[in-house]
Amino acid sequence: MIKVENLVKSFGAKRAVDDISFNVERGEVLGFLGPNGAGKSTTMRIITGFYPPTEGRITVGGYDIVEDPMAAKRLIGYLPENAPGYADMTVHGFLAFVAELRGLAGDAKKKAINRAVETCFLESVLYQTIDTLSKGYKHRTCLAQSIIHDPDILVLDEPTDGLDPNQKHEVRGLIKRMGANKAIVFSTHILEEVEAACTRVIIIDRGKIVASGTPHELKARSEFAGAVRLAVRGVTAAAVTGKLGALAARTEILPGPDGQVVVRAYPRDRGGNAAFVGSIAELAQREQWKVDEIYVEEGRMDEVFRSITLPDTVRRAA
Amino acid sequence: MNSWINIKAIMKRELGGYFTSPVAYVFLVIFLLLTGFFTFTVGNFFERGEASLVSFFTWHPWLYLFLVPAAGMRLWSEERRLGTMELLLTMPITTWQAIVGKFLASWLFLIIALALTFPVWITVNWLGSPDNGVIFAGYIGSALLAGAYLAISCMTSAMTRNQVISFIVSVMICLFLILAGFTPVTDLLVRWASPVLVQTIASFSVMTHFEGFQRGVIDLRDVVFFASVIGFALFTTGVVIRGHRAG
Image (cartoon, rainbow over all chains, first blue to last red; front, side):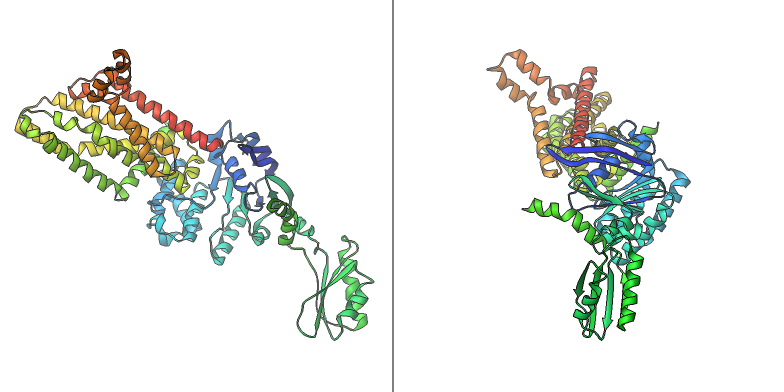
């Protein structure tokens, strides 16, 4: 539904977005990850038609955003960064205004407002002006605005920013539910969010896509991925690592409670996970170690994120 | 048809925005107090002994000089400051519809303020028998004058997110439009500039074009003048807004 081809956006000499291409289909939730200033918001502003692209082509539901902006914008619901709203309007007034601009009138308008209010839990503040709202409510008001016309495409710029943990959970669930029959793009720098809600992830840094794939695929890039974590009792750390050395490429002793030895063992062959953990389990049995826990590590998103984007950040700071 | 629905939605919001905040009421009270003060005290309404609203309309270019930019300064700068501009311009509406909607709402507000001066009209009709045609023309001219100033405020408002800067710049531009045709100034200019040049400069002034209306003459050329100022300023607003987005 969203098709971005070779998108470039320059501000003066600075290339904020540098040759980005991706697609989002119905039923997909694409997570947009990246450090601050990586070009996430700029890309979203271009998709929604706020900024014209410097180069490249964007079609939304088949309509070119530059050539046919009206048709394209009708399909999109957009939550801009920082969730702006008219300070002196009530929540209800604001939603009614947006509904009107979305071409809703009469009964359809009333229903649309009720549905959005219900979805975003805004009943209690419906007739409060926006400047009196807490950050969480303000955010949800703007989110309600973006889904008021039940759009096929949702572009959400940091939808959980400023929400408390419960609200974050709520919004993630909402995104996941809506993702079943919409095309959703959302940006965040909260990594657990990506795992919780996305079907696909794009990591962008300094205007370029540096990684993309399913959350699972990305986590597999982590150096921990496939490593086995073993916690045992009644044996010295040296003995454990000595025995494991024969099986693993490398072992690492992790801090653990007194009397317990916690070791992470990295496989020689990253593909052979099942065999690797099996052989370690056998070893532990043979040696009669008291095993408290043993499991294969999945890899961590934050570690992948850092390994991909950190070198650049460090270079920039230098 | 569709665009009219969008313009109407924007107008409704904008006009509502005036009346839900104290701004509208403060503005109306100040406007009415000042028109009263200038008409009756400074303009010597009673001492003139004539049944006309000359002493009322004469002051409008000066009064509007400060009041209209005050009413228009927030139009776009507030939108930029709050970030709602991004929201507004990603809606399925054109930039044009947004600009026109906002302008019309504020203009309507100024016209409401102007209409609330009706007691002056009642007074003059009660005291004597003025030519109501002349007064009507005066009101039309005054509304157009307010529209021209407002369009300029709209333009300066799009240029900055700071309302104060927006206010000052539009006051300066409006002041120029007054002084270019203000008799004391043109009299001074004539001493060292050719009369043709002075005439040309004066023809850009709102004073020159407002005069006719005060005398009860609705001249098409004057109407075209105000309409062009409004058109030009709103067009520039569009260019400025496009400039922000193109980066």
